[in-house]
Image (cartoon, rainbow, N blue to C red; front, side):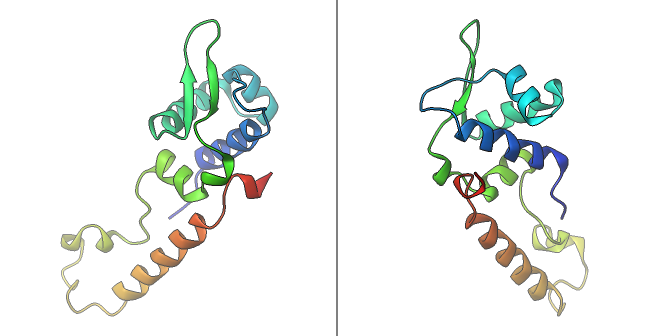
Length: 131
């Protein structure tokens, strides 16, 4: 498991959006400059966040992005899932066919506990906490 640059960029953009007044829409190009994230890459990230209902996006001349809910209600876990998909520490936790010893494996429970701990810790940190 690795937190990618896309997740880092997503968090930067969300922190910046959380600093905007309620209802204020930010343009992707402005966010890219402020956060020092490549504009085209940021566009893909913002669309992922909008699909996950973390952001609200608008098209056209008055289009842009704003948070869909308060920053205190958006966790790092939400962002990772939106940008990266399911959090997986070991393949055997999602695909029991990945290991022929899944029924007798001693380390699988360690991986499972580790994944649960990381998930819980990510759920404890909100975008509001990062401001």
